Each structure stands twice: as C-alpha cells, then as structure tokens.
Length: 588
Image 1 (cartoon, rainbow, N blue to C red):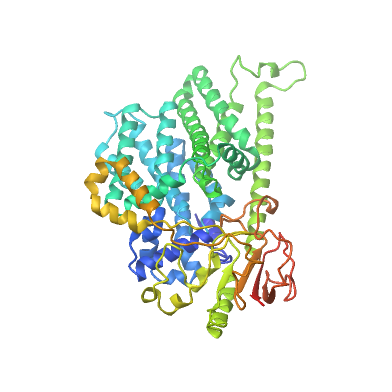
Image 2: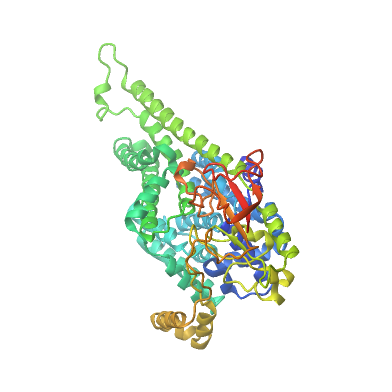
C-alpha cells in the first residue's frame, strides 16, 4: 500500500485537466456554489455531488487536491484486492495480488485522474467480497445472513451511485460463481436481489432527477457497432494482461481443470485443490464474460477495462501458484508420463519443475516488458503537455483588453471536440447555467467559447433535462414506477418537441467568415487522446486533432505558440503528431 500510494501521488498534478475531470469538477462547482439541481451532472450525478461535497471550491484551483480522492480510493482498492484474494485462495496469493495491483500501470494511471471508474471499482471489489461471504455456503449454513444482505444492499447501492453500470459486473460475478459451482443458487439469487434493491433505493433519494440519469444511461448503452467494439476490445485488452492475454484465458480454464483432476488422484489435498480450481474458473469466466458484455454494450473507452485489472491480478498470481502445485505432482499415470526416467533422461518431477519455471519466467518477462512499455508511454504522456492554464489566461486577457471589435464582442473558438481548456476559466459545460450572470459573476459575461468539431462543427442537440424534470414532477414517483415505458415515450416526445439548445453551422472554421476579424482561434495537436484518457500505448494508435497539415496563416496571425518545455518556438507553425502543441491565432 505504501508503494501504491507513492505511485499514485508522485507528480499527481503533472498533466493538465482532462475532459471528464473538467466535467466532474465543474458540475461539482455548480452544485456547491450555484445550487444547481442534480440533473446538471447527468448520468454520474451522485458521484459529482459527492466530489462537490468532498472538495467544495478548493478542488477547482488545485489539481493535486482535485485528484487526491481518486488516488486514495485507488490505494484502498489494493486492500480490497487483498481481502478478496485471501477469501478466494490464501494469504500468500492475496499479498502477491495486492503488490501486483499496487504497481500495475493501468490501475496507477486511472487512479491519477478524477474519473468515476476508480471509485466504482473499489465498491465492486468489496461488493464481490460480500457476495462471496453470502453465496459460497448453503442458505442455512451462512451465518449472519441479515447483516450480509444489508452489507450487500449498502455497498452495491454506493457502487451504483458512482456509476450506473455497476450492476453489470455484479450480476456477471454472481453468474460466474454459480456456473463454477462456487456459489449456491438460492443465496446467489438473494445476493442479486439485495444488489438490485440497493441500487433501486438510491434512485429514490433523488426521485425527480433519477429519470434523467436513467435516460442518459440507456442512451449510452447498446452497441454502436458490434464489429467495431470487437476490434476495439480485442486490441485494448492487452492493457490488462499485456502480451499474455490469450495465454491467461486458456491457462485459467486449463489450470482449473488440472487442479480438479489432481483432487481426484491426490485425496490428501482434495479440498484445497477443489477450492482453488473453482476460484480460478470463477475468475477466468468473470473476466471473459465481462469483456463480452463490454463488447455488447459498445462503450469503447479504455477506462471500462479498469474493473478487469484487480481481478486479473488475482488470476495471474493464482495461475502461477496452480502451475507450481502441478509441477510438484508426481502421479503414476498422467499426461507427462513420457518424461519418466529412461536411461539418462530426467526424472519426471525434475522435468516438470524445469518446464514450470521456464513457462513462468517467459510469462513474467512478457508481462514485465508490457508494464515497462506502458509506464514509458505514460511518462511520455505526462511530459508531453501544453500550458493550457497559461493559454486560457492569455485568451481571457485578450477578451478583457478588447471587449469589442467593431460592433461585435471578441470570441474564442477551440478547435477540439469540447473546450477542455475552458475549464481553467471556470466555464461550465453546455447544459450548465453559467451563462446566467447572477450564477457565476463577471466571468459569465465573457463566456464566448464556442463548441467546435474537428475539423468541422456539428449541431449540438439540447439535453432537455428541464423538460424531463418537469414531466417527472407532474407524473410523480408512483406513476413513473408503474408505467415506466409510457413515461419514457412521453419524455421522448417532450424532448423532440423542443427546440435545440445550441446550433452551430457546419462550416470549416479555419476558412469561413463565421469567425469575424479580431476573433481568436485555438488549434491543438500532438499526443491527445480524444476521449481524454491517459495514454498507455504507442502514440501511433492514437488520433490527435486537428487533421490539417499547416496553420491557416493566410487568414490569421499567430499570437503565441504553446509547446512542451524545450520544444518549438514562437514561429513554429507545423503540426507535429507526436509532440503536443497549441496555437493561439487572431483573425486578420
């Protein structure tokens, strides 16, 4: 845990704020300062509410403080992995699994950003621990059933509040436990019902906001492209096990079968072997089914794989321990009988020892090399950053110095999917009410940042959360619960009947007269992940905006160039893909 804490706190504020972090902190600020209703936070509203109450206004100006809760919950997950692994196997495997999670680059990277996923993973881990205590025995033999059901009810309710897809890994964990015969059907069903009721109860805490969150969640669910999701996760899955992903899946089922086979021939360790066999089969099946479910849901983001990492750490250590047991096993008749002593050949036990250590060393070498490469890419990502805070301050200064050019106010356009750097000016997302001056003070009058696509803009549809919220109040909680489909159809009609919240013309902003003389254009390029996530793989697999070769200098003057320290100059107008860059241009 000390190693994990060090890895998560060191240079915690090295990189500028990511898109999702800005969304969380800005939503939290609105809730705390402006008393904005919960719908402003959309589908992660309770998590944003928690961050707002936890950080108050302090996290807005201090990146270290903003990310500190995520780092601490990441360290807590190390302890949770220890408890779960000790429950599944033994203390030695638990210690090794916790050590592996403490330094796993995927877990470290996503504990260093303010995403909801690390918080959800912690509650999923301790929720699965509760499942195991409740469902691994018969219903009559389970002690303190009432307390365990209450524990499951509360923990999975909290997991649901962190992110609404928590019930998916919870249900898959129970299903995998029943299939592997680790869980009894009756207590597993009771555990599922406790999880479901706990999740449902949390919705009742915010009865008129809950329909907004559920509609947002359902709008995100469902595969956009099944083939695309298969290709995406088959490529990204290496971030969990690195180069031995396929080997681990095959080895999981193989070792589970071998240990079960060993229990039939070695009765002295029968109970231990059966327990290990079921636990390994349980873990392998869970990781496989959870991956399949991610593909079916079609949400193609790296962070959705984060829940697999702690379970993968336990499985990897358990496989090594299982192979080690098998290497010491010397029955009279088995698949390695051909290695029995003949003339100068090795005895069977010694031969299996050599085979075991060779396989372990090769696997660990591949795994270590993958971890080393991931850390290398992540350090490159931390170093390859632009001073967005300084850029945003310069833009604000220019707006204040030149309140108008002719009859029009000066505006700033960010050529990125969403104005990430606008966070530094304290601006909110499009569904927030920062444009109302009495909420956010003087900065509201300067809120001219536009939402621009890459390289063209698209129309932004309004969320219409106010309309749905009014409809929910009119219907009441009871009617919504008894007629959910009718409510969803009415909500859809309410949204479709309204006007779009924001319209942007589909134009090339580098050439169109939509940007008036004196307006500012901010262009970015380099090591930029469009999903706003830490980069853990080779940059050649990532896309960085904008997709144009040179700056439009015929129409603009370069006011200032922003590059990583020691890179580029004021006259640099090239858009290098590997080195980050930002250019502040002023329309001639």
